[in-house]
Length: 65
Image (cartoon, rainbow, N blue to C red; front, top):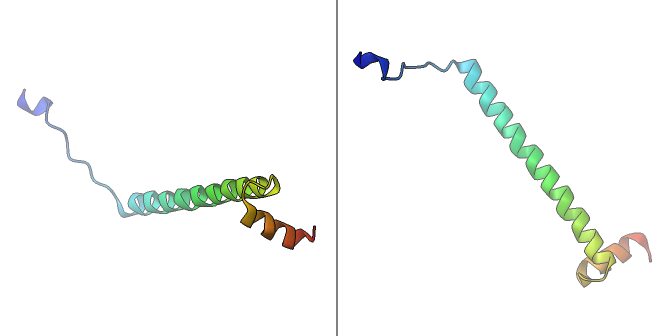
């Protein structure tokens, strides 16, 4: 009866560990790319509205307006 409550040891194979690490790192990269895109678009919108004058100057220099 005492063995019913004790957890059984589980083994993690090298392939499973490699997959977990690969997809974990891929998730972090995708997260940072999406975060960069969102912040970039937000900066451009705030620059176009003249809320961030530094970004507005860069935006005007790039577009020639």
